Length: 395
Ligand SMILES: Cc1ncc(COP(=O)(O)O)c(C=O)c1O
Image (tube, rainbow, N blue to C red; front, side, top):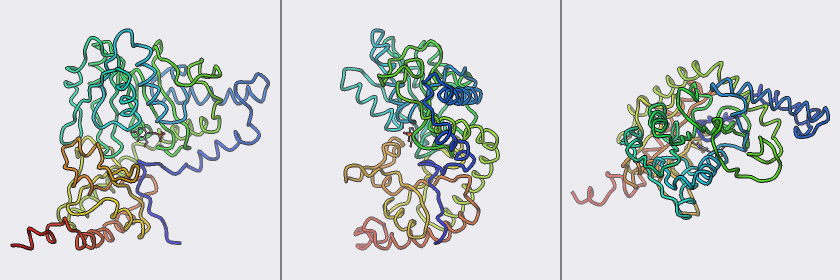
């Protein structure tokens, strides 16, 4: 079978073999429930505690500020819903950006239906939030600001430390979805000035279905799950011991190589962009080119559809994503691209390519070789590509 060229690392990453090796014993001989008091359970509890300590160190946190969850979606839901409820006597106004992940946006919508008010800060044409807009949006009844660290579609990195200063001065809680930056950029919760931060292990070569929330000491929050007294009674449910151990290992490995990964992946990403720009007409970069994750390229092509490009690249053994989400059978343009001011028809023609540790120069060169003929073929068939469109034929 021909090698699959995987260029969708923002979607998920392969679990590192060293991570798998660290996890395996906790499925077999170390299977105990960490909430039990005999040695088998205590050994598992010790592994969970060690993971908590090693993870806390990577972000300048205290171990008891780390809460294990099932992933980014749960952490985001908990941050938004849990603090909104706990602080509702003080106010029912929340602030977020227009380009957040659905886990934050839909939690906000859920609250709006229950009488909360939400301000969505717009972004500029590159996808960046202006911290002054956040400062101006804060009101006496604001309880939470939730802004993502880097966007999952266009990879733009938001000015979190500056927003953190604004929320701190106003005495408002600040949550950051760092799902796309954990393991890629150095994170320090004090430098960023955050009260809560979400992470998900499968985005940094760890296992799926496990994540965490950093929760600053003395932050009031209502639990999302009710049941056992795990995680100091704030997050009920038996610990996913292999997952937690694997996440700690993945973060440790990332710490040692993120600087090198970033330089290598940014170099390959730039080679890809230059190659595509030289070969293809009417191709544009989505998102700010400077404040951007090193592994992310998001492009827009006139006259064609993201989904058709994905399917044709798949036939060449290349995995990428588009900016569109296919929900309930209807193809909706990405809310992120629309927020940049890109018209819906152009947002549909976007493609997200995200590189990773396994990406090589050969992969990039193959992409540059196979993609231009795909674009040419799709444009030949396209009723909206200018060369084929009715207005052109009339002239
Ligand atoms: C920015 C962001 N937040 C949250 C999530 C959800 O994380 P999980 O897959 O762990 O539920 C994702 C996943 O794509 C993401 O990219």
